Amino acid sequence: MFIYFRLTGSRATEALQRLGAMQADLRARHPGLTARLLARTDSQDSTEPTWMEVYEHAHGLSEAFLADLRAAVQALPAGLIGPRHTESFAEFRLPTGHAT
Image (tube, rainbow, N blue to C red):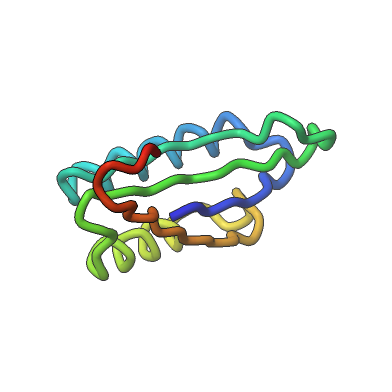
């Protein structure tokens, strides 16, 4: 799952700390979860940079994880990040013998 958003104002340090802690807590609560935080590199707007959270799990993302993620985001300080946009993708399962 990919979730992107813009930072609001100049709160990058606070956002990095809070989102990092949020992802660490989610990883602890959901063993096997991979959680990453990325910054867009081609953005021209340095005052409101675009960041992205990425979540993956070998067995898919459970409803329990999604509920925990929603609760964690709601607990973030108001105005820390802009509206979140979520996109999900599934990996193609190619037949055996095909190069990936």
